[in-house]
Image (cartoon, rainbow, N blue to C red; front, side, top):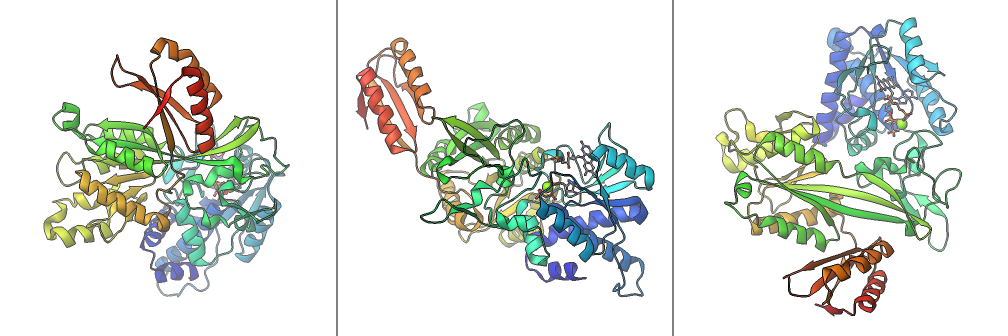
Length: 522
Ligand SMILES: Cc1cc2nc3c(=O)[nH]c(=O)nc-3n(C[C@H](O)[C@H](O)[C@H](O)COP(=O)(O)O)c2cc1C
Ligand SMILES: Nc1ncnc2c1ncn2[C@@H]1O[C@H](COP(=O)(O)OP(=O)(O)OP(=O)(O)O)[C@@H](O)[C@H]1O
Ligand SMILES: [Mg+2]
């Protein structure tokens, strides 16, 4: 079976694990339900294309497992395939769906009704009890779903089976490219997630303009460096289109695209909360992030307790992956907020070391042994390294990436956008930071953004006198940070102007100097 062979021959261990888990889910479903009782929901999108080939492999392995005498060469794909065809589908998606059905001899039912009515009619006509879907964590519809999830209340009753629920954007592309299977041509034209013609445009993050021309070209979807921005080409319902929009969405213009890099930091430690230990790492990390153009939007200190860590991670990690439209001086700027969460403290074999488990809980996944990580631990700690129940080698399942660097004894753990640092003091943090920066070109971590530029001005005005003119300045320069603080009650009021555009900062600083008669300070 060519898919199974391609994965087995690949040296991508992460992809192998994902593949094995997904095929296991498929085989479990095929053991629970007869082939007449299952259906595959296929729409020509990349996720459902991955699922098609996983189902082909899973079904093949299931049949070969049942009938040990044959070699399986005669096995065809009998799972009923359903496609909800709509008038607003991209023609490329439609023809890819039909072509695929013909290549792989799918028995495809075309349904021209809305999802609910179509499913109702399907379940009436056939004994279907379970439907395979290419839903992945991160899809808006995945919220609260597991690999096996009954359909929602108010929907016809069936089991939703989601074998690739825990796959990342990168996993999807690793699979399609490793298996060399055909996918819809729109993905080679900058589309990264495809809905209808009314709500989908190419992803601006893949746009590059031809020199000396207004023409825009797009790189293929698999080059998107940050999978969390997969849906950046989806126009949110109710969002008005920018004035430069064409009938097919945004007329992209690089000058209108701004990436806002923000990070959040969580320190874990009861001792910090008792006041017994002073956290020296937080300000260092803030400065480091600032130095590469990242703004720190939140810092938090959590107890050494799974639920407290999970609550903080859940709150902070959800601030990423936002695409905002901001109207600014009659032009629209697309702000893409890329968020990274750094967490440290509470990592290790002690009973209070519950940070990693808290991260798993935040993402709703279980902790499972990670062979590769175990090998590292064994290498430095010997046989008894991982505790009686292998605790230290247990990592959040399906969302973990190990970040290797020659200067790290043990790789850093990254769970989606949460980076777990193991540093316990400033010099260890320095080392881990340098490694992260080194790793940046290969895995898109910590993209170095334009640096922040800031000016500080001092005035003798009282807070009461400064308040009103300062708030006017904030409204006039919404793209800049303008804040004020005092080092002592009787001293000067220090105004900070910060941003990334030098000329805007100078204009704002000049205006402030005129208004307040203040002086620039170092
Ligand atoms: C086979 C199938 C089963 C679905 N089951 C459910 C369900 O149980 N509950 C639900 O809220 N939506 C269900 N949906 C709808 C999807 O969650 C989602 O709305 C759809 O895939 C994409 O919607 P959009 O076109 O509005 O983006 C189902 C869709 C399909 C194709
Ligand atoms: N019109 C449809 N017909 C059949 N199944 C559908 C349809 N729309 C969605 N689905 C099911 O829901 C899943 C999730 O849809 P989603 O749009 O997130 O993924 P995709 O279309 O496979 O890939 P992409 O994210 O690139 O659009 C699909 O993989 C498919 O199983
Ligand atoms: Mg889609």
